[in-house]
Length: 219
Image (cartoon, rainbow, N blue to C red; front, side, top):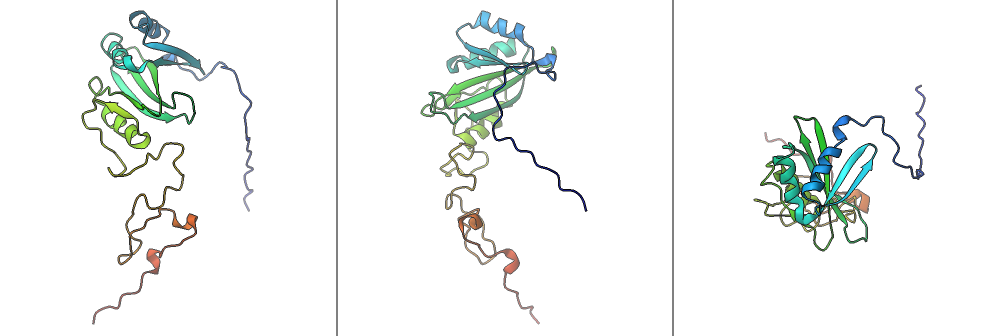
């Protein structure tokens, strides 16, 4: 009989400093790029944070397009590899973060930008005019977190129905969903719409497809 693997759980890790990251790659060292940004757009860079050998540049929302345009047209960062949002779930002024990973393929460099916005004004300029790849990334971020991307050519929900009232990746959204918010197909052909995606977790068990009545074969 195989031995059961032991499970080690650490509830809370002690805070650690910004220790040297032996796995950090030269591609994430972009001091020269940051210096160029500060030289040309000094008011756009609100902060630069180094953690685990990687630098993150915080950008003022109003100057996001200027920063991205400078990176693309003058500094060689022509490829948008990723864009997404984060719910920091804080009562601070800026609850949400949008991060952008841009790559300079020729130089082998990668830079991460971040913009913070508040819950009451969760909107940033769309960068689809500079990077077409941002199209669906921005739509996904809008769908999941409710962050609006101004001047996006087609800002529609990507996964959820257009009339869905919630944003599933916001931290207050229940892990088991909200009963009644999204009708699902019935469990059986003759059944009713399923109004609770996790009925068993809420004390109900709908009829399973394996419990359908047996149909009599025609002679």
